[in-house]
Image 1 (tube, rainbow, N blue to C red):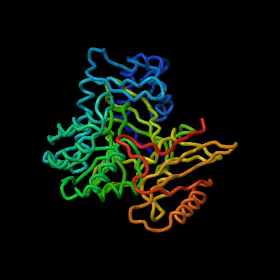
Image 2: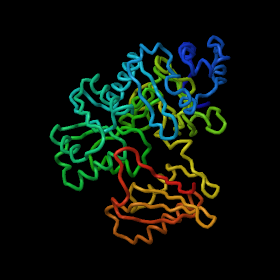
Image 3: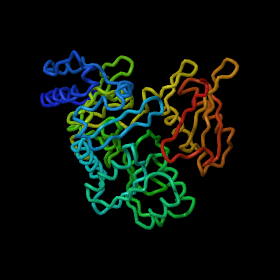
Image 4: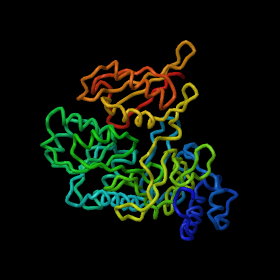
Length: 415
């Protein structure tokens, strides 16, 4: 049995229509020049379709993905463009409405109601995050506080004064807020009960710190700019994977090296095909997000299939001394070492013809033992579980930088 969503006759019909729509745009007209949607009659036919890569989307800049008359486009969003031309994603009114419906479904899955007050810290502008959280909250009927990122003092003041009950944030910024609230002794003045966290993977120790210091139940929310934005999937109360809204998309999980579907339950790269997106339909889009299919029924009763919490990204792998390192491997390792906090950074340098890996990690607030002993334990664990020798450096709680957006865990200084 392979991973991914079951391919039904209805899904195939939706995919054929999606391809017909996509080929109205300049990019897919060329990318699928020799493909007739009517020839896609089986799952095997679908799996022979070429993948779409992010580089393809950059090459389509600015409006090569647009599959409707530009007069029908009501909004655009964009990736950062830090590694090349940005990716421009056009949205029709229906796309905006569909996205809000999915986001409302996310809030409902997390137990958010119209009585809640949703404190929105992700960024606004061309990035999809902030406005997606806001649209879903407003469609639900909850009160939205569109704070955006930064100005932590004002964030906390508004959180207290407006009695915010739901925090939406990246895990990095949620941790920063949690630490500041704890440091200032304000825990009994906040009213948070839930937090929806997205945009980056995070380890178990970080999860426990945020939940404990803010007194909230946490939910992983998933999405990416190319596929609407955040809100295309979310975890439920049982924290056993993220339910994906497969009435709006079809997904597969593939081996990133071979491109073949992985066996059910085996980790791989998430690939998404939109089913009803108008402005910029996508077919077999490689997200580079690594996850796995969750098997069996979810105790919450939702019938939507689940993927696991993200492991990392297939393009985040860094090769050192012949060994591939994912940030998730470091997360998992540090989670097993008592006295180590959630925050760490890995520095990779090339000195005197050798790769040197230095792992800086924060000690837990309650740790009062020997730092040198803790460093030795981390060094030995890294060698045993990941296979390379590192320099382990223990630092105090709060010594590593905090971020209002996403945290950078690995710094490769070799190039």
